[in-house]
Length: 130
Image (cartoon, helix red, strand yellow):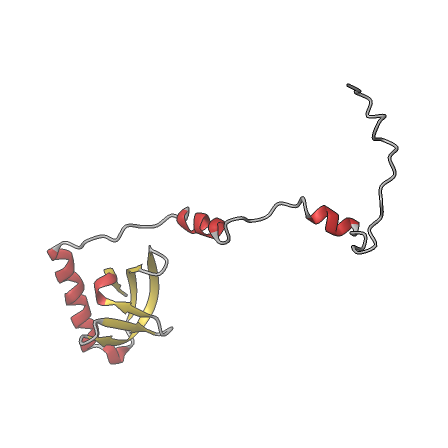
């Protein structure tokens, strides 16, 4: 057995007449890494985000929020400034926002803020009146 490859090092190879010579760029791309599982890295990134668990309110806290909502409904024409803390279901986290309530809908159970954000009444955990 030869270890110096002298038997194959100087062999002439045939140039194909049917297949054009591959460019260096195409040759290198054969060895480039690829994403075998399309979208997998996005799922890993999404799963690694920190999410808050939704808090279940006690009856006393619910009553407190309801009292403040009644006050807001009664005085909505006065453009009441509030600080509302609510659970954002899309991003799965709590948001605290200073705003003015434009509408309280007790049929569809949401409040509409001055920036057109709609918040479900069931997602609110605190309202501070200013």
